Length: 167
Image (cartoon, rainbow, N blue to C red; front, side):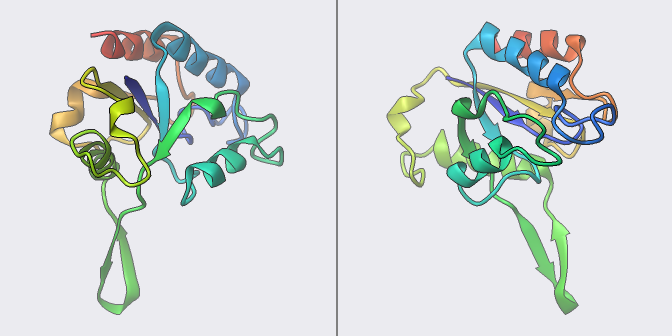
């Protein structure tokens, strides 16, 4: 199985689209999916607590969602929201790479993934991370495609993501 860890802002939500879903960027994401048959795990502030709530968030038309996200049926998971709670109620975000590692460790490297059928993934597992932030782990470097925060997903990003997933 091939998985895209998808951030939304700066990947398929761009300055051009006024930070709503960007049709052109979504079309480019579709090229990756078509070429690799990849599934999606949402690793974005757009995620909600469940897969179902996340799909609803991405498909309910409103200001930031001018059209339903066309690949909601490819979403198979969401990463956790990891925060560190420190003195006096201050929350510190844990790097996105840690959230992704936790998802992989729970769902791929363990047969005890919550609400997950381990056998669906099998031994053929590869992934790509599409994100405009660089807070990934060193071990994820060869799986990471950094997008331009303002422009979002580009044709070069698509080619790189396909190459990573098809290794």
